[in-house]
Length: 504
Image (cartoon, rainbow, N blue to C red):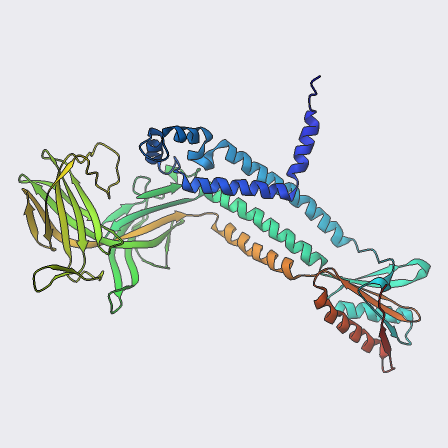
């Protein structure tokens, strides 16, 4: 006999599991692992050529593994259906956990705590001998507790006994915990919204040149899932001048980009500093990096095959590297470039490289290669595929000079600089700031707030009792201060005696 499980019972068990805070932590851990995978494995929306290379087996762990990853949706983690399911389950779990806690907190806040069965059984208990009417004693006790910032309630006990109860810290501790979890909830919403609506891209702009903010103008491009080509602002950024201030030893001190921004209503001068970005139509422009750009003119067989400014990237060895890829005349021409900002010659004529980024004595070293530069293939503009190329010679030129190697003339008319900018749009940044602030606001009180309770009963003797649910050592001094204040108020010039009662 096959027992078919009741779908309603299964749904009920699943819902009860989902409502546990432990389940929310499990789901959060799975999302964190998925996000880590999304940062390690190339993602199709960002680097589609790399994903294709993995699937073809030319890069990565191999074609079979890549096909398995593709079937699992690992090449587009944040767009995979299972990632969306995890996200929905996490938000459902957090919501189902927070709403009952808020309702319980509100009910607890409105309802006074029931008095203890035996007041003298508390951790701290004192009896005060004072000739004061019961009503007056309770009135003074209530005033003293309020001065110590206790929430005061009045209870009628068995035998028509009246008790004043004070409580402090209950709303603060639980409310701070709720605020912390709510801020965490808002933080998740801000992060997810940022992945959907945000945008980040980087581009290098050479001095004297302009760049248009369009989808095809970026070096690297990371759009959110809901960010489309129509969302680009289309403004034009011109780098008029890049200013560098140096220390005595040649180390760069400050960087400042003088730019002109044209939003379509005329150019506007702006300045972009290291920690001073510029906001254009809701997009923030940061200054990230800088380097040198060489204007290189190449002639082969008497014909100009290249006349452009080449962006040179800094290397760990201290020089700047770039490449030139020029078609024909058959065969193609390629140059591997190395720029040294400060290169001198010693007494024997040997080159001496000085570790200084200032263009004191710049020299452009180049290697000439002939063959097929494979311009028909998608490739990185900053690297050179030497598979079908043959090196035919080397040379060196300074700004304004030229050199001919193996029939190829290389001219170096001028040396400029380029600046790397990051352009980003983060509409959820205010929500992230708010959520982070609320996290700290809720975390600190939840760690240090403590719940304390004090009771005062009046009769032949006045009984004061108290207990602390957290940080009991700190409550000892506070309870002593309350008793001393109450004793002074009740004495009213009459001698009053107090003695501690050890609870049993």
